[in-house]
Image (tube, rainbow, N blue to C red; front, side, top):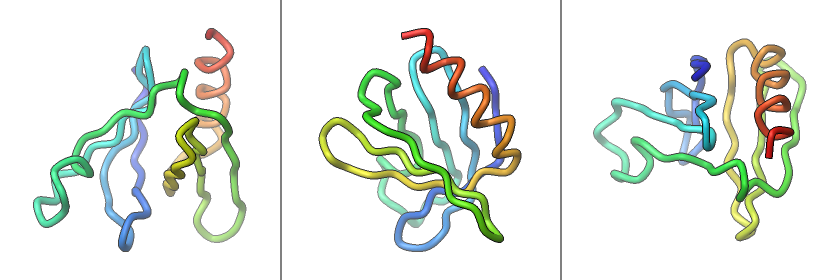
Length: 92
């Protein structure tokens, strides 16, 4: 597991952590004022249809899922995150 500091862009910016785990990308936050599912969820590598990256002041990654949903995150250490994500997704 590789852990990164990051924020989920959902009704604002929610600080937390993003982990590249064996089976998917897991986001966790301690913020109790958001829905329960937002506090801890995993995007399965097999369900990720596409990944895009944006440049700018805040480096972001957006996941397009096979069900059409999109999840966007600000990730600290985006270069390392991108390389590690590509390695993990290529293992499928």
